[in-house]
Image (cartoon, rainbow, N blue to C red; front, side):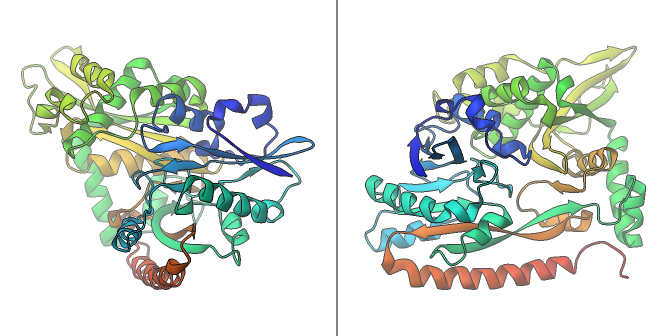
Length: 428
């Protein structure tokens, strides 16, 4: 068995990829990873230079692990800026570094795809040996495996790598709820009342939402979603990591694992300016001022294309927000959201409650709504521990970082326990 490194995923054919076992997770599909590369989101220019690890034997492709050479820590969601600062204080270079992850996607899952009959324990020692050799050749300070599966994390025990822990909040259909009312029925009275009030506010603001299967998403709807996504990032003073070409490629190649929520505002034709404030303002007009020349075509498309309202008698309907989800046979994954209005509780409805309803409708037992967000707890999302694995070449930092991850783990476990005590469910 041997290992080589490739600079683009297209070096592996569809037929080769199909030799690998895949659990259905949308983010480790060839189509998803390829969309990142073809759109430029994962490229040398973006700081995610592909350098994928390929495992081969006399039968052909035996395994694959995404690998990127990075000169920054953006888009990882396992924060190591303090590590980089420590290196700098000692006159050492932390960048470049090697990262095995799905770029911009803090979702736990397979990171090493293997052919049937091959186990992680069979190849982890060889993978680590070649990663270290590659890091030495490139002058990389370290290797980081982000959000691996539990099995992969266990396979890396006793290999000299460090394990960092993080806390996310996920929804589980723990009692085989059949609909949203059954789910709410498991809440304490006060928490149940709060959720119902939040959902009523949507109708009180003349908003409605619809869930659209990926195979039925139209070009107009995708354009609306991207405009919302882009404007929401511009409000924070920066561009979104992902461009229109990325989302277009996904819709063209893997729509069966996508779902789009669109929110619409209904108002009288003579009262277009409702109580909701619009987020379009100067962020659209000045979008080219952020990262000049980068994604310029996207910016122009956003400025020139507005969501056209539909009219019926004196009523007007205009799409105002959107959230894009992915799913497999067991789980729903909330990833991207945006809005052109400031509407009370709209984010909770579009990103959480609509996702829970989808899970209940489709029989999905698990919903990963994205990283961070303590506000998820009171809405029925349970704290879970995720992990990442790290190797650093500089031996002088080993003991210091080992102590750091131990203290971090203790804090993470305490935090998760405290969060568990705040869940809205009735006490048994």
